[in-house]
Length: 138
Image (cartoon, rainbow, N blue to C red; front, side, top):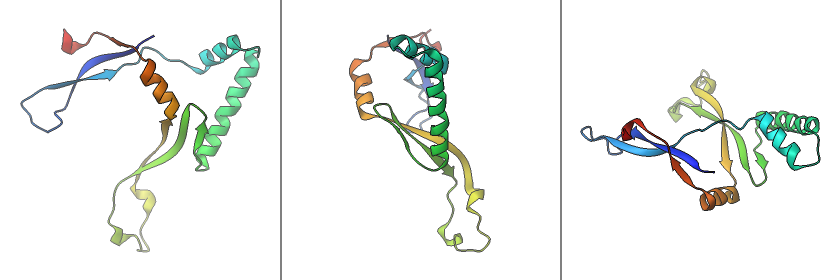
């Protein structure tokens, strides 16, 4: 198996206008979904598919619950998930005002994933690359 990539256009890192730049970017070759994961676990173990799906579904619900409680969810040897907030910057001088509403500065809520160091090392040490066609290389 190989990580697929293609060459895509990108902006000039120094901001100059007259030069076009290109860079390599990984591209998705498909999805590995919940059903596929459950089937693979079933085939690799003696557990039934129904039991695998029940455990994975329960795990998903507990992960959601603990993310909403502000906890970091650590999946050993995979990585950690944590809810994060993105907001606009504001002058510190307006914080103590009675009318200051910090919620109005929030632009979005997301989930940050940080891969486990051993998983990163494994992928970096064992990867293969395969380039797919790109419009820039025509």
